[in-house]
Amino acid sequence: MAVADLHNIPPWVGGEGGVDKRNAPPSLSLRPTGGGIGAIGGAAWRRAWREAAAEPAAPGQRVDPAGEPELRGAIAEHLRLARGVSVDPSRVLVTGGSREGLLLILMSLGRELRVGVEDPGHPGLRRVIPLAGHEVVGCATDADGVELARLDSGLDALLVTPAHLYPIGGSMPATRRAELIDWAATTGTVLIEDDFNAELRYRIAPQPPLAALGEDVVTLGTFSTLLSKELSAGYVVAPAGGADALLEVRKVLGMPVSAVTQRAIAHLLRSGAVRRTARAAHARVARRRRVLEAEVLPALRRLPGAEARMSAASGVEVQLLFDAPEHRAAFDTALQAAGLAAGTVETLWSAGDGFVMSFAHLSDAEFAQAVGLLLGVAGRLAA
View 1: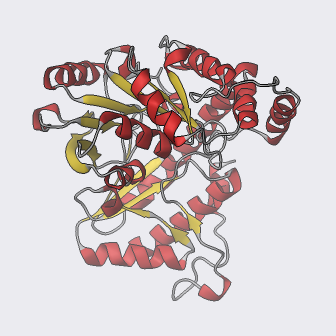
View 2 (view 1 turned 180 degrees about the horizontal axis):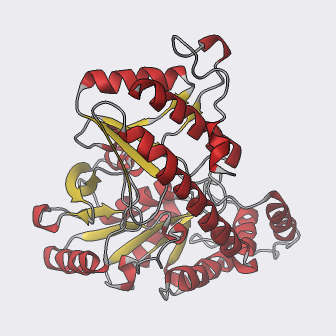
């Protein structure tokens, strides 16, 4: 996709007097969302389903409440290859996605916990915490993640996303990770690492997960990024000797993922399809970043009272802040009229007035359309 093609603005954008709403397309969402950029192709999925469905269940075979041994072994091998961490399959529990996984962890830790979350941070998992009867405690962050000097030493658990810091996709450096491990050991706080999007960092090798640096870390993983955003399946990796408490809760809740689905995911992991998808996603992210850096960021920075930024490391999320409500309102009105929807900074539990726009989950055609629409909006408002 040539950058020049992005200047071919659709007819519903522009024109004297603004946008012609009569010809506006359906809303195209730029709100941050999990999954999508690394979705496995249909042919690979169909092959995996056929192979999984063809495996007969042994008569009287007991269902393992922790998950199918085949999948747990494949997850352990995937973590070794993709994240450089050695995990015994006995410490892996299959879940119905990251939210169900977090609920499983919290229920195993006890009642009425004080659980720290990043501020700003992704809102999805944060909403699970009060549902489990626990208190949510906001923890200030900077460009490198949670600020250790400002952390509450009275936390029972701390949920962090060091591989992909919201809202603009930075990464916690190794020194901060080591300091966080030491802080947790000193205060007795359980670290819950949401390791999403770690494999999709294309510019640099992924930093080691917290579990590779400390013993008392619970790792939360999902398959939505690398397989499909519609797939409700994931995993929890317990710390050494800590799987029993999780397993007791798992036995009570039951297994939410069917055996056939688990075997299909195991086939995809072991066949190399997931690693090939990750490499293709790296290339796609790199192309999109080049367009955003060359075209979109300069245009947004010309808006009245605006500050636009994107992580220097990787990712395709753009944060757009405004210094006055009238400037924000003008952009919001123009954005909606153009058929675009963006996430708001307030949903990330952070100070500031503006928007977060993600370009990871879009198809190539949608990405080209979104960039064209944004350039048209920015051009009119900056004129």
